[in-house]
Length: 290
Image (cartoon, rainbow, N blue to C red; front, side, top):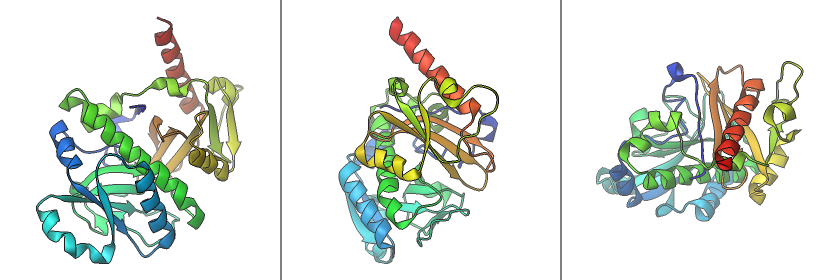
């Protein structure tokens, strides 16, 4: 898998901070998951419904799935009790500006969630895996947000299924040492949404990152996602009650290159983030030269 995740604020680790991960402890649990059918829960929002179904058709490769509206789920009760199905839903964080009437999580989270049991307000013990989505999603944005979210979930399960041992998929291990092809950071331009870059000192973003960094309208980032542009990385930030989650992601296949948490009022990409990305690139080049 081509992903990396780093985090320095280990003292702040909680459900929210570990939210990009699955919560499986053994490879046997991943194998069992693959045999279950995913029920993609649809809500009374046509834009979300069409986008998540299309994203699953195009990007979900790990197991079988079908779709059903949230008011039709009683028919899955026997299968749920027999642990034959799981549910894919969307959770809006409390500070979300998304207008669609979707689900939420008891422990605040914004994005896609895979659940053992469906509830409109998901409980922590029912959540198997999650993928971040933007806090503000307009009608036309759902296609791109769902493409990234489904790709990231699929990436997680593919990695977990190929892990060498149980310990490699533990959330704590994945937070500190998430295997990835760090070469994806090389020779890529980094797109940052307008007004989300905050630098101090004399060095500019290109010098700190050691590569091209451009502030753009979010539509440019979405175009790179739909084009699966292999030359582009982009910055995504997602807020919940306790954290601002900061991610750098590849436009092609939504591979996670960088993850850090900050306080909710500090969501902008800064010197520290760019320097961390640059250091990772230097380590990759050093390793490649051996």
